[in-house]
Amino acid sequence: MSGRYSNPPLQSVDLGERLLAYLKIRDTRAEIRPSKQHQRRLRPEDVERLSVDYLAGAKVTDLAQRFGITRQTVLDHVRRLGLPRRHPKLVAEEVAQAAQLYEAGNSLAVVGSALDVDPGTIRRALVGAGVSIRDPHGRYR
Image (cartoon, rainbow, N blue to C red; front, side):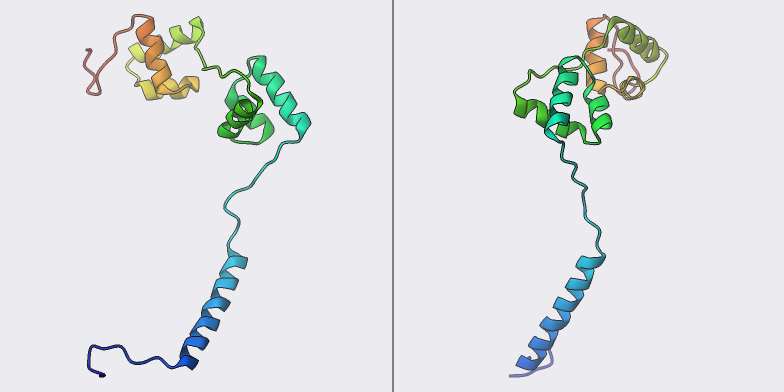
């Protein structure tokens, strides 16, 4: 039954030609498309150096930049090596600077960006230092 709304029957030759055309298009797209990620594998001596520097107190972001890997990859190496995780703590000077920036009217996000620290870390440090935190509308709580 072939009506106005029904699909016309496909010939087996048409299907074969369509499949070949699709495969040719797919192959050319694969050649043009750049790889989505660049993998950087560390040599064993680099992993050892990373672990020594991490244990010495180097920042994870600095290590990532130095070795040309992501922050998460640094943390993955730390986990695989069984090293104790440390969470970045702000020293007294950084807390004082954060308090000054925050009390000047900057948001936690701006202060965190200035100190290269997560806004949640800034908030915890400010609360610990006795600084009153504003709500999202700028009112003190």
